[in-house]
Length: 325
Ligand SMILES: NC(=O)c1ccc[n+]([C@@H]2O[C@H](COP(=O)([O-])OP(=O)(O)OC[C@H]3O[C@@H](n4cnc5c(N)ncnc54)[C@H](O)[C@@H]3O)[C@@H](O)[C@H]2O)c1
Image 1 (cartoon, protein in one colour):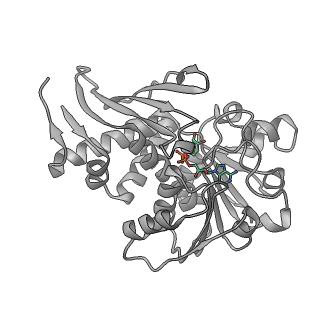
Image 2 (tube, rainbow, N blue to C red):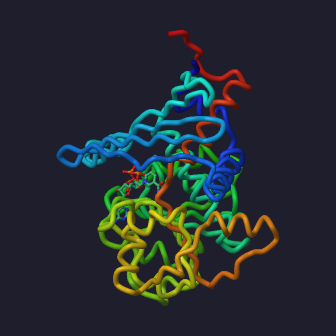
């Protein structure tokens, strides 16, 4: 059995490999060849434990995450956990890896797919609201799929983003990128082509101002609870369609549920990014409006497919520690 920590997981794979694995995961979801029971959640005083098993043809994965809302105030990660990969034939445990790292790695690549398939080819300015764990990897993948030269950053609670910027520079030493820290979300939105949000906010991150938001590509990562939303009503008004990852997102995330409940968005205008990816690959690109939006809530197939990639590449490249029970 292979054990992989955070550094080893990032050493094992490249960003394009993870994006490809996530595109595979979308294709698997579209094909229906998977078994993904509903996420099980155990909760006490707002602290949550989530269990997410998923069976694919070639691997079984279970992600166990602890989401502790009090952690950021203590300077600790909001999410932590484990991923277990079982052999599909025998159930034997093949690998154990860091669940927080796999989440950030695959969620970044999912957002990266949103940027790859929705943002204009020449989009060069990306704005991030929420400079935490997910936001960091969202930026890595955005820079992988578009010629980014400016990164704008805004965080409602962290004012000193020096360390965050230093870590980004260290991960992308070859890229010439200007970093700009913004005082509020209006300033962030004003000069960004792509706007990524990865926060725990309840109220929308951006001002509800159509003139400010018109023509942007939104990637919304944070909300997976019906009464939390990152996107203001103007986004539903500006886009033709909002793309998402699976039908359940319409019930789970306030970014879809609230505009659907209030009639601002209609079910026929919620589209699936797996169709956009498949159609684009087949040479049938969708007609996109000037303003574009992808809302992701995540699913176990991403963990299974990305975890399998990390495991296989680590074995191939001799990374990690093998142990006998
Ligand atoms: N879509 C998915 O698949 C997926 C996967 C993992 C996590 N998430 C969600 O993403 C969110 C972020 O997770 P994380 O692990 O990066 O947390 P984190 O605490 O590391 O980072 C979140 C950052 O957002 C900032 N923030 C909070 N409210 C804000 C606001 N209104 N405006 C600007 N900044 C704000 C916080 O100060 C923090 O720095 C969580 O809600 C989490 O549940 C989604």
